[in-house]
Length: 228
Image (tube, rainbow, N blue to C red; front, side, top):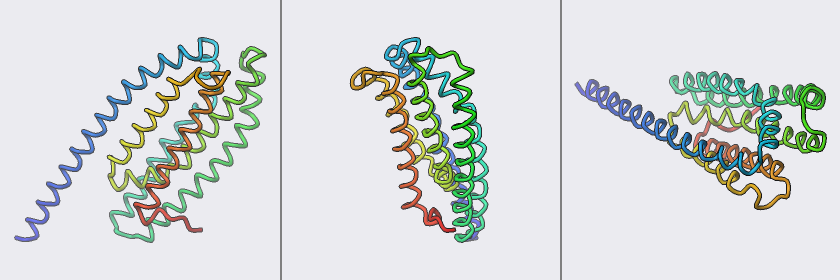
C-alpha cells in the first residue's frame, strides 16, 4: 500500500515537472522569437546592407556545420540519461570525460579544416569587396571560435538536460539572446568598424555563455569533473 502511494506521488511529481519544463520552453521560445525579430532590425540598420551581407555569408561558412552541435548534444544527453537512470555516478563521470575528449578531437579537426579550406574558400570563391576582405577574415575567425565554444559547452548542456534542469537552460539561453540584442543596439557606439564590433561582441557573448554552462555544470553536478 505504501509502495503504491509512493509510486503515485512520484508519478504526480514527474508529471508536474514535465508540465513546468514544457511551459518554460514555450515561454523561452516566444521571448527569443520576439527579441530576435527586434535584433535583426537593429543589426541591419547598424551594419548596412553590404556589411550585413558579408557577415551572413562569411559566418555561414562556419554555421553550415552547426548540425554537428545538435547531434552531439542529443547523443551525449542520451548516455547521461542512461547513467542517471542506473544511478551509476562513476559511469556518469566517464560519460562526461569521454564527451569532453570527443569535443576536443572534433574541435581540432574542424580548426584544421576551417583554417585551411575555409580560408581558401572565402579568399577565392566568395565575392567580397577587396577593401572589406581583411575585415571579412576577422569576422570569419570570430565566428569560428564562437562555434568552437558552443561545441565545448555541449557536455555541460547535456548534463543539464539529462537532469531536467530546464529552468537553468532557459535562463542562460535567454541571457544569451539578450546579450546579442544589446550588442545589436550598441553597434556604432564604440568601434569605427561596426562589422568588427558586432563580430567581436558575438564572440564575447559565446565565451560568457560557455563560462555560465561550465560554471553551472562544475558546481551543480558532481559528475562534471574531468578525468583522463
